[in-house]
Length: 86
Image (cartoon, rainbow, N blue to C red; front, side, top):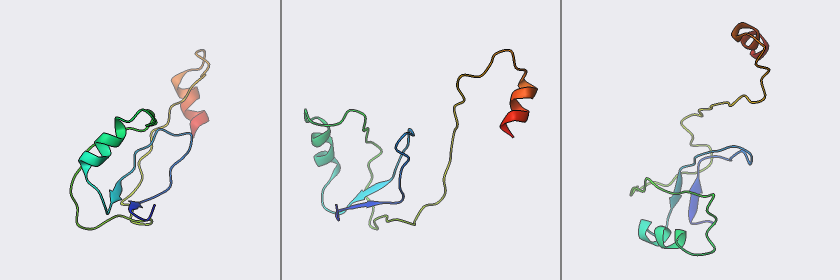
């Protein structure tokens, strides 16, 4: 794992994205690995670019969140929902 650099930790139940740098390897190698039968299809990779400085923990530029609310009583008004969320 020392060849991989990551900026932060991920929520195990969230749908997340993460910047990762690899110090030894290239995009073609990663694409070949993604086509292997034992690849976890829940993991998607893309937006490859060459960088000269790796990332590491603590170098986040910020976080962005979206929240999905489920199982909301349809009898509630938008105002009721907004006051409960606050």
